[in-house]
Length: 171
Figure (tube, rainbow, N blue to C red):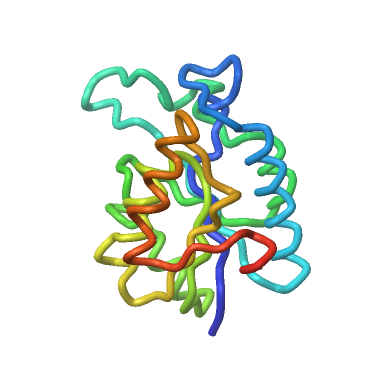
């Protein structure tokens, strides 16, 4: 039984040149890649989460299936070559996905969450009803969103429900 590093929505549309570039993406990416490498060195499984917009609801502004923007960032894919990829269509990475089955197969009891966007998909996954059976820690330096203020507001809101730590502290 142990930890898993869950990397949420580190996808091309959130980077410069994408459909919805976020604040501080390059630094967040670098810290996330380091966390992936540390996790692998320590035998902590890594799980990648990829958001694909639900095409039955019409064309979304970004993350449309089959587009380069919906692809996971190359640096994360290269760092976590053997990681399972869980595809989701909602902010909560557990909702209508196989994430719980993947975690059960790996014997996971503790989630280290990171990714994009802090106040949306990271938060919804961290406080999901399905996450309640895990010890959850959000890696504050491996998350980002539209700007620093919203990132900090999101982390502050999470602080009453889950643990917050840097990647160096948790991985």
